[in-house]
Amino acid sequence: MAFIPRYNLIEELKWRGLFHQDMPGTLELLSKEMVGGYVGFDPTADSLHIGNMVPIILLVHLQRAGHKPFALVGGATGMVGDPSGKKAERTLLDVDTLNHNVTCVRKQLQQFLDFDCGINSAEVVNNYDWFQSINFLDFIRDVGKHISVNYMMAKDSVKNRLEDGMSFTEFSYQIVQGYDFYYLWKEKNVKLQMGGSDQWGNILTGTELIRRKGNPSTDTIGSESKAYALTAPLITKADGSKFGKSEGGNVWLDAEKTSPYEFYQFWMNTSDDDAERYIKIFTLHEQRYIDDLIQEHKMAPHRRTLQKELAAYVTTWVHGNDGFSAALAATEILFGNATTQSLKRLSEKDFFSVFDGVKSAEVDDLEGIGIVEMCYNTGFLASKSEAHRALKENSLTVNSEKVAGDFVFSSEDAINGKYILLQRGKKNKFIVILKK
Image (cartoon, rainbow, N blue to C red; front, side):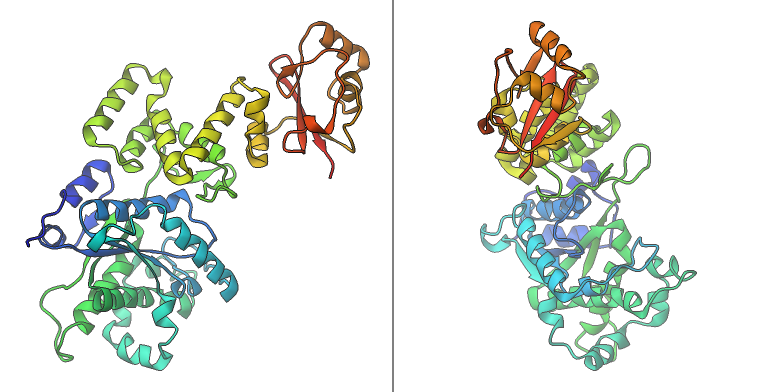
């Protein structure tokens, strides 16, 4: 039975802004057979970040078009370090840290791809599985002889570092990555490697190795490439700055590193121009639906239609419905719609994210302390007289609920057993933290 793709993958990537370049013949390959394609992820941390979402989404579209995606977690290449786009050599990780990172990254990748859909089910592979048994001398004899030093020196990832110097470890990275492609081509029938545009040189090393080493004759080079490359542009903001960073650094996919609320706010804070591009890149909405959203947004930009849809979609995709609900609740609190119940739904990380910069004080105990005493002793209000005036004005709240002068605290008032939100009026907030 002839293979019929579900849609033209390259055309899909182009209108979404996810296409940079490909090798000649890639389109023809994708149109005539189910293609195994892979993207590599170096486990330099125990979580992926939103900068990794573009290569993940390339795999998602590959699978949606009817092809078979492979996500390669670089347990071996992670020990070397990719020099692409780097001004200095990376710090090498120890084996235990690397193994931990590989396990975490593998788990995250599994939430984006379908691993149980028949012949084009996704697979996660670890290149340490094949590199651990390769002898160094065998590798440089059987693999290294096929790639010349001149070829490797011509790559931007090498040329850009020649002035400051680079170690042999990093210099060898492209041939190690190239062998990944060769191995997957040989053992898994993978014919396509995808990645960011900064990976073009490394990917071509793989196609060159396959072209040379993969030919049945060891004396001649095949006349046609047997493997193909496709890259996406590096995503930037409208002002040209790097995408994927916040004031706190990377925006991680791990909720412990970047809470769902912080994650949601990153997307909500995108500019109109960025939101118009990102809605195509980071969602799977159809073109007509996105075009309608863009027009709706342009008619009333103040409603932030694109940002809301983008933030809701990506947050739900990464953190699930519960994560999105928590992010939405935290956002509502941020804009003054807090209730005791909504405060209690916040994680500790989200609580302090929402109330970032709010003054606080620690107390040893809550039991039996009156509202006036608490306001004065913690420094929330300047005097007991001021506390009495606030009570008379009915402007004091504890965890967003109005209190009277006879209010007495107990340990049950502490949100998550740890903190209390005091407030006078709408703007004057204060956090009481219970010592443990």
